[in-house]
Amino acid sequence: MYESIAAIATAPATGGIAVIRISGSTAAEVAGKVFTPAGKRAVKDFAHGQMYYGKIAGSGVTDYGYCVIFRAPRSFTGEDVAELHCHGGVQLSRAILKNIFANGARPAQAGEFTRRAFLNGKISLSSAEGMADMINGQSLAEVRAGSLLYSEKLTNKVKDIQSALTDVLAQLGADADYPEEDIEAAHTDNVKAVLIDALSGVNGLVNAYSGGKKIKNGISVAICGVPNAGKSSLLNAMLGYDKAIVSAEAGTTRDVVEGCIQIDGVNFNLFDTAGIRQSAGSVESIGIQRARRTLEGSDLALLVFEEFGKEEADILSGITCHVIKVCSKTDLGAFSPQADICVSAVTGDGVDKLKDMMRAAALPAGSLDGAFLIEERHYNALCRAQTALSSAIEHIDGYPLDVISIDIKACWDILGEITGETAGEEVIDRIFSKFCVGK
Image (cartoon, rainbow, N blue to C red; front, side, top):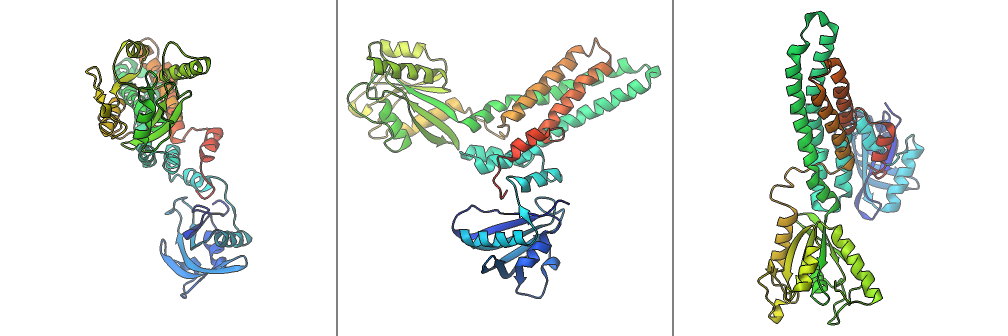
């Protein structure tokens, strides 16, 4: 067992309660030195997972609250864990933590509780990353995806593939041990079938990253058009507040103005760009160049206009992403048969329908169902596993199976980087540095 560590597990702010967590072989012993139960049962004899009321001694202060003991291995970290629940004052919880340190625990490092859970086999490395995504998620979709990752969805799929590869490697090892049986040719077709099935599983995970990337990074939406087409007004209408300056003077927007909305829990990052036209002053020209660069890097574009003419057609011809053509200012009687939708930023008419169209264009039905592959680290590992399996399949008919086993073992090891079985210390350190001290 590791030495006992302690930290405040709740946010460093005033609240109803604060939770102080201790983990390690002496967790109950340390808790017993700062917590005096109201009843007769000593802390060391507390029932697993049951809360007990009593007095909590801090450095220079006393509080009343609860203590709960989780016995190894039935705890988050897999070690003995004690939690003290005190009133949620910042200085109060710090005073209690200081007394805990004085009685034998040391300060926990960032992510050390979760790291111990990983090292003690309670969670996989990818599950720990899912927990970090849940905690740090900037959108509801990212939190949902992190929850699926935390629940070992990816780990289970990876382990299924690894299990099939393990069986193949064992079979190839047996063939090498008994060459006189001359059974290699008979096994080749069976091995190839297993590898093809494994590659199919890896391919499915790799393909799922497109949805996961949208969850992680959000959808980039460029709002473009000629000057004074209503772009900034549309941005403000979608945001629900005035972010961009709106003026009847053409060319008011000189730089990209950003905003963010959530649709189905996914962030849509909106970029209101400068009006694009041929003749412009030097400052406005810089804004137009930035507008074109924004368009080049966007997932979706809203082409805003009152009437669709040659300038709009020229802008449209230079856009490579999906485009929704938006006729604005319907409150002033604007209408265009070339538009995909007509809206009014003033009255809000059509704005919600436009958001529905944006969702449908960027997030096809079912594209986020069960999405959990949101970490680039996992995606890169799966791409390398894809390459190793493809190589094994490509050469299986022309090389001895013991040579093919090199690619198969390489694939197994790469997949182990995702679960943590073969991950290096540098990768593990980097992952747990994302956590706060109390987690």
